[in-house]
Length: 281
Image (tube, rainbow, N blue to C red; front, side):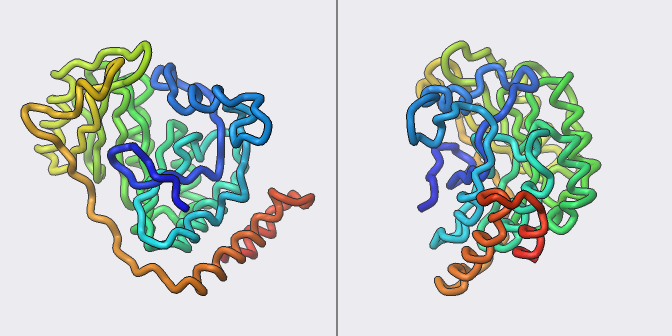
């Protein structure tokens, strides 16, 4: 069963990796860390190790079991391009996305330089898949805007920006080659304020550049009260999804078996990469 998501711009989440490390100001009040650390030390819980980095190879085949097409946020509880994740494991995740063209996968990272390097190298087979969208998080000028440049200079086919939490006025953002922009304020305890002018500036830039604009939330301590209405309306634009028919149960079952066999290097005693390469090509 897919893990249904309350995130407004996706249907489901898929977490073949758990855990992360703070990198920039946008990480200060990380919802994923807060959630995971609640369960640190709880025997048998998926987050028994809290927010420590863990590969979860038993989750690799998960999207192939879902019976209907979904928009899937990849690693909502981690970052696929975190330095501690082996390159061949990242490739394995991308191979699963390649095998499931009936889903639309949304990959979001703050490690934009590593993503660019891999999309232009070992992930070139997945960079322009029509069912995979590659995005970067943008929270401010110092850390966020360079990520936009890294994404733009990558080999990605569909590129998007998640400008959340928006922590300051970004000024003019280069939207050339960008296919989608999400904007939102921080929510929860200690949420930092987001000014209306910052949001309006980004909305207007998207309108001029004809880039789909999605306004996720105003945020704040009680985001349900502040809502997501901007100037009397909601903004829900999203790129068109690649449409593909879900194969038969038998075909999907065979794919699951291939992926499970390929995951042996991370679940068993063998630690080489040949298994995943031979299993999914």
